[in-house]
Length: 325
Ligand SMILES: [Zn+2]
Image: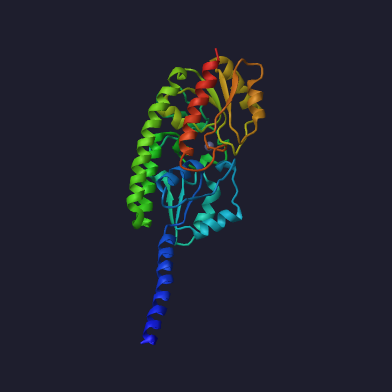
């Protein structure tokens, strides 16, 4: 009698921790998700809200163009169940590490996302081939002066158009729902909320840049094609096509002339890169300097980052361009 009772008690005691462990295991089944760069990480973080947090590789003020992997990044990749990256045209540093991952991880290259609008890479940055018409056909003849972007046919800064953010978000949601069916409903709800927020952002940006749409400006690197395409702002040139290769004296001189010819009112630096070049280009012209942060170097990672990034570009353009005469 008392033996039976104590057995029952023992099994109850054994059972309780078992349940606890089971609950713990279920939580651990949320996939380990790793994302290459902040703007994409922000979209993934939005969709994972309430479920988990994705890890980020290019953290802090680093740029994907000049990044080298850290040991902690390699560890995160080894544990990962899902990896999102833009593609080898942007994060060249990830190519080898991803190749060497086992088949355990699902690797999603977002430049393959259905519905993503891709624009051809501009060999000369926003310089050559700006005569309207045939799809930058003149570009083939130019020498390859840049190191990183020239591998791919397309400009890899896809995220600078909210419509492309939506296309990538759909692919992210689909991937997460199949990797983690238990949380599929949450991913879907979060995707719907994200899409609504992206629509609002888009309308806001149209309004923000409307007063300065026709004012030409110079940017640091040729990252803004998608923003230009969507909001019809006028990038007149870039100091460098890609930050892997810094411009020579000839190009700087050319840009300097361009500012005078076009009456470009602003030259925009980027927080990760040498502001000296911007000053060289500005010298002796009435143009002002501003800052744009297309890769979110100064922003804190998380669901809001994407919106801060896009609104920041709109506001910086409006502020600098409307203060010029
Ligand atoms: Zn870039």
